[in-house]
Amino acid sequence: MACFYCNPSWARKPVADQPAQEQPHLLVPQPHAEPHETPTASHATVSTRLNTIFRTEGLSILLNNREDALRVRDLSAGYYATSEAPGHILPQIGAFRSRLQRQGVTFSFTYKGEAMADVGGGISRGMDYVHELTLQTQFDLGRLFGLRGWTIHTLLMERVGREVSHDRVGDYNISLMEVYSLSGHSVAHLTDMYAQKSFLHNSIDVAFGRMALTHVFATSPLLCSFMMTCSAPVAIKLDAGFSVYPKATWGGRVRLRPTRDTILQVGAYSVSPLNEDISGWAWAGEKTTGLMIPVEFTWQPFFGSRKLPGHYVLGFAHDTTRYADNLGDIPAGSTVRRRDGEARDTFYVEADQMLYRKGGHNQMAGGYALAGYIHNTPDVSVISDEFYVGSSLLGIIPHRPHDRFGLMYSYYRMSPRTELGQELRMDAGMALGPHVNGPQTHASVLEAYYGVPVYPGILVQPEFQYMMRPGETAHIPNAEVVGLKVIGTL
Image (cartoon, rainbow, N blue to C red):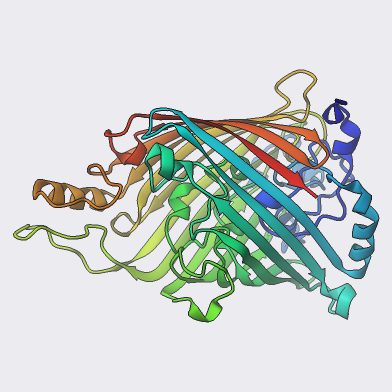
């Protein structure tokens, strides 16, 4: 078969007809885009296309003038996902796409399938399969109705399959597959329906409607190239306050760019249980429990003559919902008392830094190191602390310039309050609950992948995961999981 992947011409062409939106794992990469090419993904470009409020630099002013590329010019190519192959499987409909785009409508249709098998450890040998079909559309209201600058984003999806973590590994807190749905199978789940508009000479960007909080908070394109951390670290995804993709909620966010190297965004989102509204359409039936208010600050410097970008994120979120104490049922006669419900706070630090550039001038044309730490209010959170460290490296094999290799280690500390309650019940001879083999303390996972764009619009990505302490106890053997992810973009 001809090696279309080895011909860089299709990989370097800008994909001008891709819809802009804010989900990092649905965007099309351009691994070697030239400086004049501008990616069309909203998540990638909103921050770069925003005008600065103050025409200066923030933290980067501490750097040597010759080492900060922002002092020369901003890179036109933004920070966007690497999880799909560039191009389209059916370029024959390109003319139809272009006609729609001229009228103000853009779309993409994507298949993502994951097959993962437990080949050692865990609770049983075997394989599970999940897939996701997404129809993503964007409506330019300026072209359609004369409402200049207004855009409507929508996303419909189907998710179906079984989760290898539950069936084979024996863990019900940490999902080892990306697209397994928290709320079960859904044929036509409404994930997104929100409006977006920039104000004050394009210096402030506003989005509001039905959306997932982790579209833009506590995430990054690099995280979404991994199965477990897309679209946010596990410690954030497990709690209801952070509406994680595909769970959408009512809310909005404001993003602004105070200086050329800094971004500030603030949001307000309603909170409802993660497993409610399986279809995404039953808005009247959702039970709102509180309000989530996230605040996030990002520093984006560029270092050295090679213009190596970095993204350093500091975030905080307050959920006003009053959650029950994780202690659970207390044996009769125990001196330990359950505490009153309390709100949940989340603090997170995430960072990535390009280490080398592998051709091209955009922010993904090279290898990155990344790390992060998340802390949740321990008494009312599933996971109180998470730490991860990893790398995402482009073109490490000669003559394979567009392959990407990823390696990540993640550590998870369960809520100490949960552990205490389980210890009390075990000592009293009480049941610990379904799928719990003992007091749950911590677990860790090593994940590795190798993504290969094999054809325009098709990415094949072998996966390996090694889970230590499945179920967050020492009762289940460490699990070895292997599999394959395939992504196809029509």
